[in-house]
Length: 293
Image (cartoon, rainbow, N blue to C red):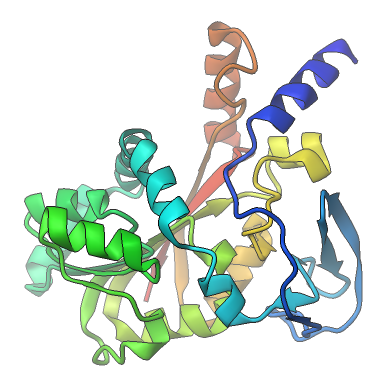
């Protein structure tokens, strides 16, 4: 009990940054994954709550804010947050690419003579710049204009501020598409994943990173889980995310999770043991799914 209380108090203090809860126009919607209309309460957070679909188990905020309200959240404050944490975020993203076996993907891209990559939700462009240095032809999508403008100005990157579906990229154009900590922010993840499938070449790769609601921390902390925040419209489990990509035409080749205990929540030796176990046994706080078109 003492350990649980200690962790819970620290979790409250270290939740992921999010837009402050505010009044927005909302509407009730069917489940994005299965179309079901029966839900049960899931997580009761400060100022908002999640429900769980009785048919497929997808956890979601419902009623849900309109897309225009969601897009308006990502202004200058979000740029400051990303810049102040950019080094740490980039290190995590680079490790995720290693877990996805980026070297193997690059070998296959070279065989296909197609090294076009699209990062959706590219923020300040640190990952795109890294991939460009590895020989990729890079393009980004970032609806946060302050972030996109900063990345274009400071890193010379080609970034669109339109939502993915409004860019009308050619069919079968990219060999690799990545979306890190993005899909949980979207009003319509089904349309998004289908569009990614359309613009990928047959055999191309889609890398998705998102919080794991079937992980240890989500189960332990419930409504106080650090990923249960106002900006996350959906919280995926391994099962619900796998179903989403399968129904859009993808094959899941690999799933990796990491993050057993957050930094500062336990002695370093214990954290190392739990983090290794989380990665080995799949109960980590964050998951990466490597999909094949």
